[in-house]
Length: 80
Image (cartoon, rainbow, N blue to C red; front, side):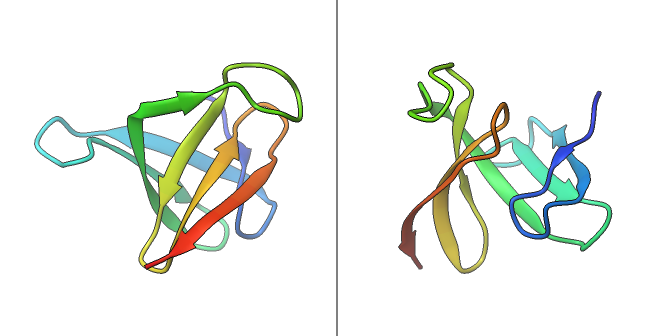
């Protein structure tokens, strides 16, 4: 598993875990700043920045947004 760019602090320390007993089952965590978010894997789309299907919808305790794991583009959706 490779480390990706954290959408919160921009460090190359963002990684995911999968737990079938959780809903949603995929969680992301930054080893640098401690940021965590949950991913809804049923909501994936083509990124308008890099034109690849690598954009996922993430949600933390405050906000919901689209994040591209390829080009690191973040598109804010809403606050909770």
